[in-house]
Every structure is written in C-alpha cells, then in structure tokens.
Image (tube, rainbow, N blue to C red; front, side):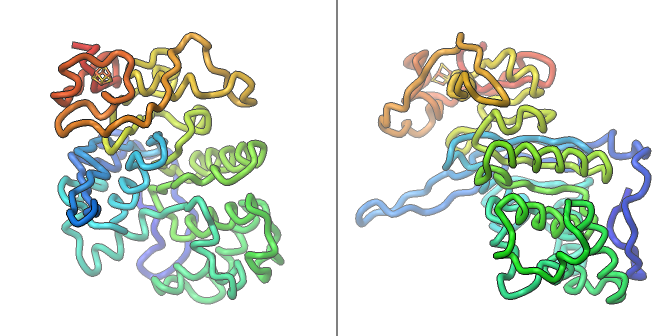
Amino acid sequence: MNHSPSADGTLTLPESLNSSDHDVHPLLEVRHLTKRFPVRQGFASRWFNAVDDVSFHVRARETYALVGESGSGKSTTGRTVLRLVEAGAGQVRFDGKDVFTLRAKPLREWRKEVQMIFQDPLSSLDPKRSIGYSIEEPLIIHRIGTRRERLERVRQLLIRVGFTAADAGRYPHEFSGGQRQRIGIAKALILNPRLIICDEPVSALDVSIQSQILNLLMELQREQALSYLFIAHDLSVVHHIADRIGVMYRGRIVEEAPTETLFSSPRHPYTQFLLASIPPTHPRLKNTGSLPVITDTGGPRRRQGGCVFSDRCPYARPACHEQTPPERQVGRQHRVACFLYP
Ligand code: SF4
C-alpha cells in the first residue's frame, strides 16, 4: 500500500487499512548495522563503535522501540537507517529495497516514505516562517500538488493534531513544547510516510503532555497504518506504545522481546536494571520491586571482545570479560545476549 502522493501531484489521504500485503515481510529490516566514529585520546585516536552489529526489523503498522541510556547508540541507529549519517557496514532494507544503494530519484522517492520526529521540534521548524509554511514545505520541495491543494492538506493536518486552520499563520515561538511537538508530527505526516522514526519525541515534555502526544501517535498509527521506530531512554515511555522492544547498551541490542514479555520476564541484567530504575511512584508504571538494583560503577570500559555490560554486571564471570556473548532465543520473539542463558 503506497501512501505517497500520486504521480500527478494529487493529495490523498491514506488508502484503506485493510490490505494485508505488508504483514508477510517486515517493512524495515536492519541487518548487522555498524557505525564507528574516531575519538581522540591524547595524541592517539581510536575507533568508537556507536552502533555495533545491530539487527532488528519493524513490521507494517508496528511500533518497535529502541531503548537505552544516553550514548547507547539508539539515535545513531535511527539516523543511520535514515541515511542522515552513512553506515560503516550492514544493510537496511525497506519494503525489500536495499536503502544504501538508492541514488537520485529512487532515493528521493524513498525519503518521502520515511520521516522523522525529533526530540526538539524547533530543529525542524524555521522560527522565521509560519507553522503553516513549515508544514507545507516538504510538499513544495517535492513539487506535490497545487498551492490550493497543499493549503488544504495543511489545514486538514493542523486540525487533526489539535489546532485550528487559523493557527497556520502563527509562528513556532507562540506555542508550548507539547504544541510544537504536535506541529512536528503534522510536518512528518504531510508526505503520507509509511515509517516514522520518533527520536525521543516526548522526553522533553511533562508526563501529562507526554501521554497526550503518545496517544496522538497511537491514534495516527491506527488511522494511517503507520509503522514507528520509537527511540527512548525510558522504558516507562514505551510501555504503552511499543509492540516490541530492543534494549540497547553501548552500541548493541542486548535483549529484544514483545513488550509484555520484556516487562514480565526481563532476562538480561541490564534490562532488569532499567526496569528496577522506574520509580515506584511513576504515574504510568510501577516497578516490581523484585529486580536487582545495579549501580553504575563508572568502572573501566570493557576490554575488546567481552560483554558490553561486564563492568557493571553483578553476575559477570571470567568469560564475560573475554568473549562476546552470542544471542540466544529464550522464548517466542525473545532473544538475549548473555552467558546466563546457554
Ligand atoms: Fe553479565 Fe556476563 Fe551476562 Fe554480560 S554476559 S550480562 S557480564 S552475566
């Protein structure tokens, strides 16, 4: 099902949600993705694996969350998928197409299908332009529709995300953080994408506003058959929105499972640590109180080849410091990279 505007530039709302052709294959497949950056150490430099052999997939109409602390590589993964940064190795396939080999027109066409929502919506809104223009701009860039058709589409989207048509003439500074994120969502939707990469879209907002934005994203997903790659540092944020979760630590996915499985039976010690870190008073979620508390020792980085979590893990054994634990299937759609699960 193609939600892109038609070749003649006519703007249409998404087609029927009844098609099942994308249920067979994943919409997005990421295989062995690796991205390294050089870092300076005194006079020497070394390579830092921001994303290290990461594989996952996102199905049509699914929300797949990548969760981990700051610096775990989740945002770099999202940006590499979108080709905002070039990958060092690995493959990304979108609807069967090899994204890294796309050039010129096929690349421009693919860019309409995948959009991004940022933590700071101001980064995608021009402060000197009205929000109506900012939302319309991708249509102008891709030469889609007549002026009248574009304005009508902007009006529809503004109303859908909770504004009035008259708000199109206002400027970004006139809105609150939550309202700006709604504007960012409208802008991401203007080209009728199939996949949206949501990079920490609610982490700068109050908890009550977070819930409103998450609810809006879930409603839009149902209405427009969207898939989300949802990036967050907080498991409590993704609990309601994600179908499956990949937990990232220092560039690697250490555990992946359906959301309810991950919350009820976390296997990796780092996932257990993240769950135990959710305050018992959290309004959306309470921790079980039975998970181990692991503190960040600030200890040395692991030696090359060992488990990424070995310098913090209370269960570490000698092999953990020497060898990378292979991924094991420990349940339906549940994989974990830890020597505790042979
Ligand atoms: Fe801990 Fe070893 Fe498992 Fe890594 S492989 S999480 S160090 S027990």
